[in-house]
Length: 446
Image (cartoon, rainbow, N blue to C red; front, side):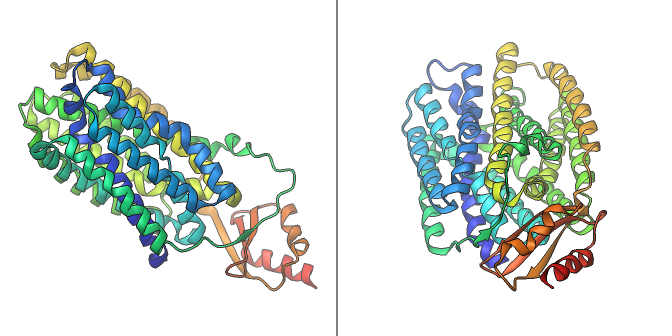
């Protein structure tokens, strides 16, 4: 498994490094442009998320229909062009255009779908955990390198550094990423939008939107409050982000183990929500620097608890033939949340002129109310651990012999991995057992 996913993890890590590395400094940097206002700065921070939101679904559908490889390379090239625009920007509108173009390379869902294609479902939480850990490492490096590079040599030079990352990623993809297996599936009269009515997928979409919205809002307020209210220099921000990410990585490891080994997916999601609500409660009371730092650390713990399991859950709920599309919608919800978080953060600072931390009380109250709704929503999520896969050696390619699976209660889907000569049957182990599936197939073969 590791050999298959390492190149894709490097690519996703480089891409998120490019997106995250500017987050610690971009709000202060964008405010320095002529004509910049807090509202526009909020859009600059979350602007890439608008185009991510728009293009995630088309990119996901394109990858399902035309293949993952070309879609990923196209997205990386768009990210390169956007980064160059940000690097050469001399006005706020060019910077905003660059951010939009960075987001237009919406390949997150495609890379996740490709990992899902080449990894068995039983190993997928581990694979997604590795991907989440890779993103966390990219995040941690971003929190350290962003303030240092941006503070010492300029944020424009930081964007030039970012522009190199997609070019390196394209080389890695062409040289080292293995082809996806050849999958055969038969679905008659399929409703291609049925997944939109899947309540489990919808709950995960909402979770992604709220999690990413709270993240962007945090990155809007944290650097501005530290530099304006507590007199930090932009070069010093890494001193907060680095230890916060250490706590976050430990939280991610704990979450991965609890989800994969113990099947406690829902428990981890609920704990993460509690940490989100607690973090904003602490931030709203942070009249001292130390209390504010504690609030930021608690926020990173909650955020990183969610990261390794959300996409894994979505791929478990999605049918094999529509993973790219489902993940595209999932990521679109997340990027919509990213944009809203930055936009609301801009409006918030426009109202208070970035100077009164006491005004966090109001927004914290709203976030706590949202967290209560979110908590109740996840409480209704069924335990995904009851879903299992049964792998049967393929003895024939006559699909009609397996059509009996379409009529059996408890079997969610079945398909053939022709590359590995396997029939994969996904079932609910509270309704049917693997031995029952094997007996049904033996009778049909006889």
